Length: 201
Image (cartoon, rainbow, N blue to C red; front, side, top):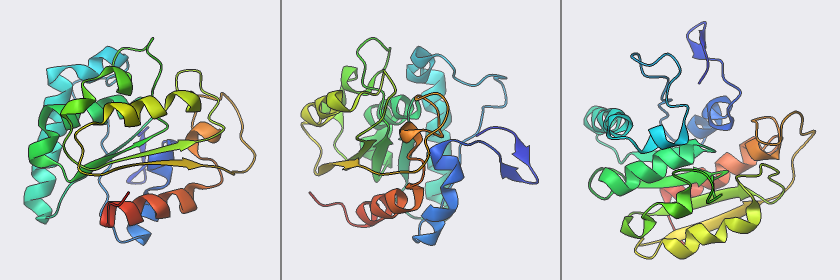
């Protein structure tokens, strides 16, 4: 989420910069930052499968459930989809309302890529959101259906392949390109929020 500036996260990450769109659509938002005992966070993909990382996420989820009394959904983008998927497998069936995976890591060359995890164990709703022009080599759109194929035991799942956007810039794997839903943040979040409220095929 980057540094905290004037009490707000400064990251250009799709989910962080779109957090107000979620609240505009009636959802509460909690942004997970870097763990206080790790200066660089969980940079390596394999780290996101670790019991330490999953315990961190679980504690946050338990706190939010106790604090709000509402279902908690995990929403991850890019390498955050590795974390969200691992959490759903580890404790999601008991503690989560569902998960949303945006710009998912799908390359089998990456440790923890979503389709390489044991996603058949997930028994909660799953929404997969991807840009049809995502140019990140580890998030190739044509590999996304492998996620849907592996989700064999979810009560409901949906793939939302979006299009459009304005002036993608920089690295195709970074937040200000199609990979980060540049220019269509509001519409994308609106669709995500509607599905979270009422998961349907």
